Structures are given as structure tokens and as C-alpha cells.
Image (cartoon, rainbow, N blue to C red; front, side, top):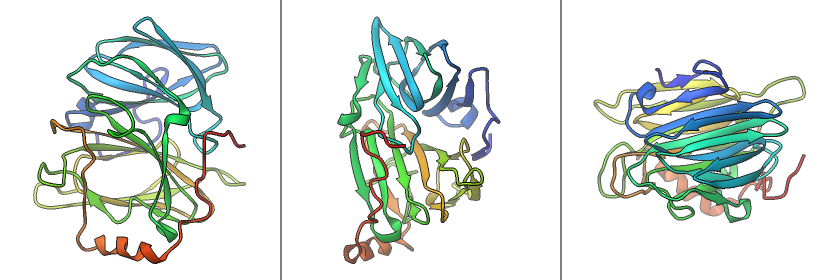
Length: 291
């Protein structure tokens, strides 16, 4: 599997996207997207992976370990911050939806088996990051500071139209002071325009010998970019179209931590934010549903 996975390329039954450690060619991070019709119901085993059931659109019921979690979900990723459910490794999970919907299953290869839990929307930390045209919103629903997991780190990022996100370019492909090895998945949704679907762009490039990669690609809703190593960013929201992406990260470090290193050629950009305001369009979403 290459670093760019187009919508539908890895579809399997009710799953419109299936990325596993095996198909990605790495050891820890994975992502599935489950599409359920009205009245749809599917059961699956988590195996060696801990997972989060994250509504992208629609509501659902999650059953696991004798627990039942009713997720209110949302109309779309651009309408509100959602609630979610955590399910552990070695579990049988059933997801059902009365009205149907799409549900992301970010996951990580885990050693510890933790308890299945509900994550309320109002418990999600909404962070406004950057400034000026580098302003974006980060929904920290499954970060080490926000939610307990064994290996999984996952966040949602919303970037207003014409802004640059994941910037300055950064990496996390070495285990050293101030940096952790993390495999990362970027899953994209782009807000539609009045005449059709939107577009955005993603850049990934080499960070040293043995870490060769060169991606500068257009992405549309349902596309995914895999980042085994290398500098990544910017994620570019083009004028007219707001951008959403789901980041899924995990790696071999004994500590569950998001530690990054900026590309030294561009890290100076952070210093320019001190004199700029955060984009007034942010936050794009809160826990209140908006159409």
C-alpha cells in the first residue's frame, strides 16, 4: 500500500476504508471507516487493537463487554464536536444505527486491556492552535492528557478555508529526547461547495537517509495519507472549502506521548504568531449542533 489511499480503494463490505498495520507496512496504527445504512448493525472483534468508535455522521449504539453506549453523534464533522466510545483489545463489539451513518474506528496495537468507556462530547478539549492563516482547531478527544488509552493517540483538526494547517512541517520518526516514534494516519473530509465536492492538499517529504518520501497530493473527502516517517505539512485548505482531518497515531515508545520536531528550515514561523490574531472564524465547531 502506498502513502496515498484514495476513497474506496480498500473498501471491504460495510467498511469503506480498511487500513491495518499489516496493509500499511508498519506496526501499530490503523483506521477503519464503517458505513451503516438505516437499521444497520455489524459485529467485529478488536483482536490486538484498542479502538475508538467516533461518529463522522449519524448516531449509533455501541455494545462491548456487557456495556451499552448510546452515541448522539453529529450531522457531519463540520456540524459539532461528537461523543465517542472506547473499546479495548480482545473484545467483541457491535455497532448499530437506527438512521444510519458513518463511523471512524481509529485504533492502535495495544498491550494492556483497559475498560470500555464512554467519552462525552463536553469532555473533549477544543484547542485553537496557530494564528493568522495558520489558525486551526484541534479536538483533543484521545490525547494522553485528555483520555486514557494504552497506545492510541487521536485528534480531529478543522482548518478554515484558505488556511494552512499542520504547519510548520514537523516529524516524529525517531526515538530521542523531545521526539517520539509515531506512525500517523491522516483521514480527510472536505466541506462541499455550492457546485460539488471540495478539495485540499497534503505535503509529506523526506527527513533523512532511510526516510525517503515525497508526497504533494490533492485530497478529497474519504482520502487518506499514511505517514510512516518524514516531515509532514502543510495541510492546505483551499479558498472556499473548510478542511477536516482525523489524525491517528501510535508507536513503539513505552510512553504514550506526542513529541514532535519542527523542520528547522521552517520552525521560525511559530515566532510570527505572537503578533497575529487567531482566525475569528474559529472555532468552526463546538458541542452545539449547527447546520
